[in-house]
Amino acid sequence: MMQPSKAGAAQGFEYEPPESPADATADATVEAFLDGSLTILRGGQPRRHLNATNRQDPSTVDRMLAERQPLLENVVEAHSSI
Image (tube, rainbow, N blue to C red; front, side, top):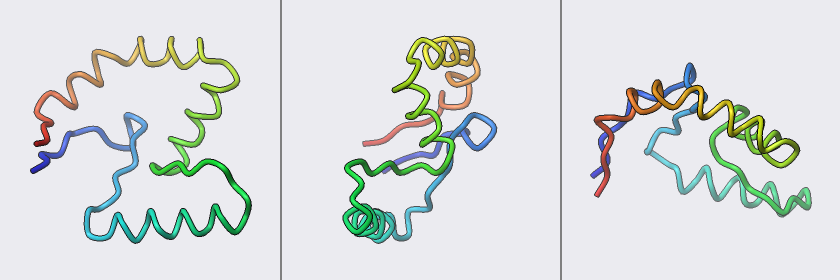
């Protein structure tokens, strides 16, 4: 069972409720198939932006994550999954 972390929008994470993640993933897969996309990213606009930046300028993402590491460690310290 997963215990949620405190990471949220302020830390760049968009939470997908567990009620129907399979449906949301299936919908995204069909949408990608129909529009010819080769990549399916879950996690909302922040995740898409982070991925795009990482492709164009990975050192920017490295710096950003290094600067935010103490905050991220704090908000996920109680997170666990089995």
